[in-house]
Every structure is written in structure tokens, then in C-alpha cells.
Image (cartoon, rainbow, N blue to C red; front, side, top):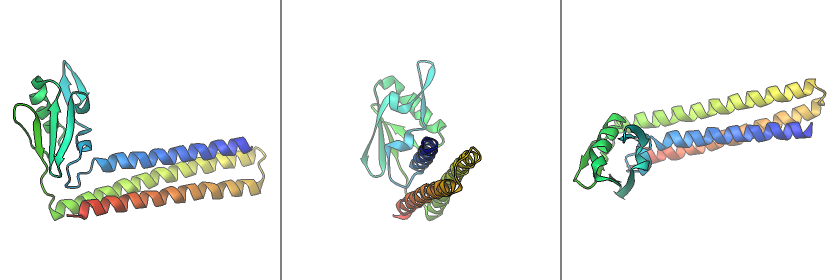
Length: 187
């Protein structure tokens, strides 16, 4: 029984970590008015007849807080990179100087900042829903173990451990959202 409980707890912790990682990934896509290379992670570029991520055909850097610079490994890709950025619908306006693509990041309006905070909170709530689903699955597994002969005290202890894991990860989600909200609203 102890092995089964350990497996349930390990699986729950892995699910919680996946939820947190997904939240961080989604929040990384929210533009906080500061240029970050990760903003272009979703951009796909046509390269010899197939779509590939921008990071596989160019180097993305940030020379300052308001500028992204995309330096392709082949100059012939500049127009494809511009097209890929436009199709990604990120609200960015790429320009090229013949050597590289330069993207100036516009300053966010207050209205847009509030919308981004709302989106961040929504992603946080999605992460918490994922955590609650993982908790429900773990509790169901404990209940099935209890039916198979686990003592009631051991089951109650396992349920308390499950709840503690979820509470800790829920607090992590709150901290991550608060940090992102501060990042978005800070001018």
C-alpha cells in the first residue's frame, strides 16, 4: 500500500509541476511592454517548403528594452521571417534593414495593461482548475485503495497530504500571477 500511495503522490506532484510549467509558458507569451525573445516563440517561418520555428533559422536578441532584433542565418529568409511575424498576429510591426529584422515594441496603453492583467489572471485560474482536477484524480485513487483494504486512517492521512500538495502549488500559482501582474502594470 505504501508504494501505491507514494506513486499517487509522485504522480500528483508531477501533474502540479506540469500545470505550473504550462502557466509560466502561457504567461511568457503575454507582452508586458518589455522586449523579450520569448515573445517570438510562436512564430513559424517557411523554410525550404516546411514550417519551422523562428529559433531554428535565426537568432533573436534584445539590444534594449523596447527592441527585438532577429538576425537570420541566411539573408534570403528576411522576407519569410517578416511574413511569419505578421502571420503570428502578435501585434508587432517588423522592419528589415537588409541584414536583420528589427521590431520596435510599442508602449502599452493603460487599457491594454488591464486586459493583459485579466488574461494573466485567467491563465492562473486555468492552472488552478488543472490542480483541482489532479487532486480529484488522486483522491479517487486513494478511495479505490481504501476499497481494496487500506485503513481509514491511512486514507485520511493520504487525503491530507494530497490537499497540502495542492495548497502549496496553488500558492505558487498566486505568487506567479502576482509577479506577472506587477510586471505588466509597472511602467
